[in-house]
Image 1 (cartoon, rainbow, N blue to C red):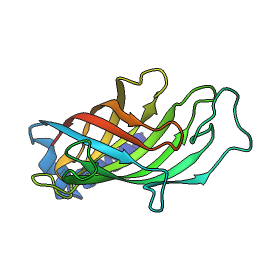
Image 2: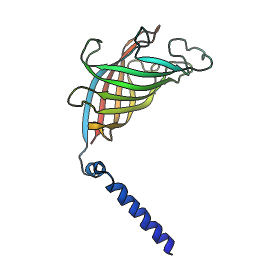
Image 3: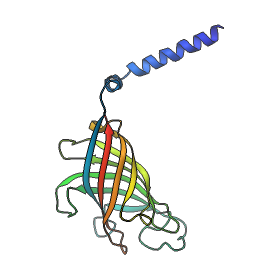
Image 4: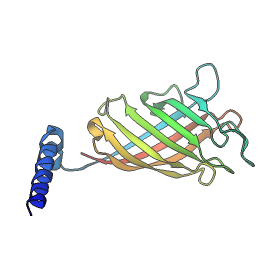
Length: 186
């Protein structure tokens, strides 16, 4: 009977150490949750001399019925600019870095894993993370992506991003995407 008691004592001690090991964890336990709404435009450029998204891997062969700049199995690394308005010359408010994978065999569908860091006040240096499927072909007017985390002022973020394609060049893949983001965070 000593073994279960010892095991329980060890687990309780480990939990206490875990909770007390970081001041951030104890600070967040009682902190009220906040809701933040963000609006910006992402500029994803595959063409030209200085693209913001580059092909880093591709599938062995092309899938049927899916021609274009992002064929099935393509993996792109991104460092996209975020702006206040749809014009590239509008105020820069951040950048999105990460990967997207062309996951649709018969239509344009992407899986995104991206970190959206804001560089404008009041959220300078804070970021949220999107990991979700972006079914561009099925929902060109409106899509929803999952927000799975954050850092800085968006610590422990969760929420969603509603996307609308503002511009898409189907020949070279350049796109401007409007983001309306709702975050719940501490």
